[in-house]
Length: 629
Image 1 (cartoon, rainbow, N blue to C red):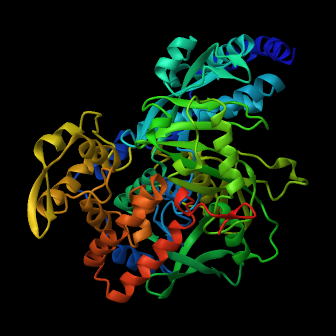
Image 2 (image 1 turned 180 degrees about the vertical axis):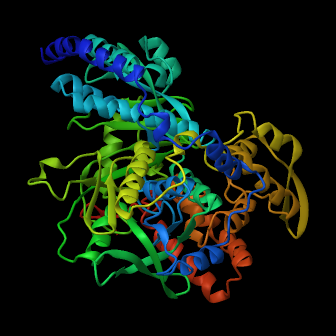
Image 3 (image 1 turned 90 degrees about the vertical axis):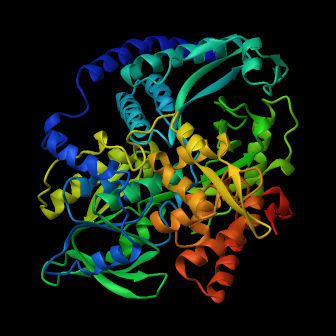
């Protein structure tokens, strides 16, 4: 009965959504005058970023550039935080012709931005809320998410792709309900549609997804409805944004922490920050006309540096994910359970040769290294177990991690009902603009809003408007899905084995991995594998090469073993034990690149092992009171 009522509401609201969709499609979300001063400026910036011979400035050079920003010659914008939003702000601002600096306490994407579901959402759940509540505000969120989803995929084609997602239906009402809803979603998406949704019979569904259960809750599978969303390699996309900003002229510095703000005594305005280089311990001042706080879950901590009594605006939420072997899901099809027993949504998706499943949504304290609770891991296993015909085992969990969603509330709001998954931009202290909330999909639009606010706050004079809707990140311009064939045909993997250098084939798996991870810059990595005898795999069963460690140290600000196993490669997220086995060789190569002594190498090994202990694989699945011990 409840489903029938929802279907009637769905039909009643369809006309409203369709009309709104038509209006949205007729009028673009931005005008040409808002987006820049013309083709010449776009072409100049694009040429700089797409140059395959471009050199990413060294970390030392970036630190010198920040030190050179004095009171008399300040930066236009200093960004605090190197996650998706912060790196997006730096990329947006520098491509507008502004002088930009960015500092990140840990590493680019070290927090929430590397711990996502890896989906680029088009806002299908917002559409459901918009329809049932007849809420045009929610509908606008759908339009925005669809536009930004298309933009993210186009801006980083090597790191993003469309992924079909299957919703199993064990009731004919469910079939009709989801089919109608997703057809409306197709209609609203219009030109931003990735692929048309469709219904598959029970037999077709099982052929596409062999581990799908034919029965659930004592009901037979009636079929599935499949729609498309985007999928990404989140941390590598984040690192690509930071490197793109650096190539475009921004001074980006990871492992650098803001310890205090500099203020103008007369106006009490924030005019810069005291920075500590966490690698060397050195402290220095950097001056800027505006500081943008993009510290994600830690944005309140940054705001407290300006005013210790500031009203909090973050309501943190924990999202736990687990990684399972590839046999749990087919390579090209995801599974979405729209409503579990307690009403939550659970995904099971193929990702980098393994299966990722999640997520949870629960209150959590804000910590640098959040850990998943065993109850949350078990909830995910139980949720997917109901929809699979294979035994779901705790011992199959290769990795499990927790991420903190920075749900935001407007600090000027009178109550907490304003907590939202949308983003908030505010300037509650002169010269300090805060951007927080939102989601990965809308990072580019969030960055644009933050830069616009910073321009207004500092009365800055950019050379042009926002260009990021028309710019691909480094490695994206000219990339093609068949680019890996060039690497496979033209390079070999020279590797050391028992004291001898032996040639190895640049096999399809390794070539595809390099192509997708580095885009058009993949040939640089392949050249290191061939010419410097670093063509060996770091871990059995994974196509990650030793050459990538050297490349990332030279070109991607990889300053620690954790930087590599967690963000430059995704080994820690894919297989905690494989990452642990690869650690000695990763540290050995980084030591050669960064001239580490024995003491530093021992420190790196210890810190990396402590980091991996927070990823709860089945190997350390010993529990007390629901927690690992």
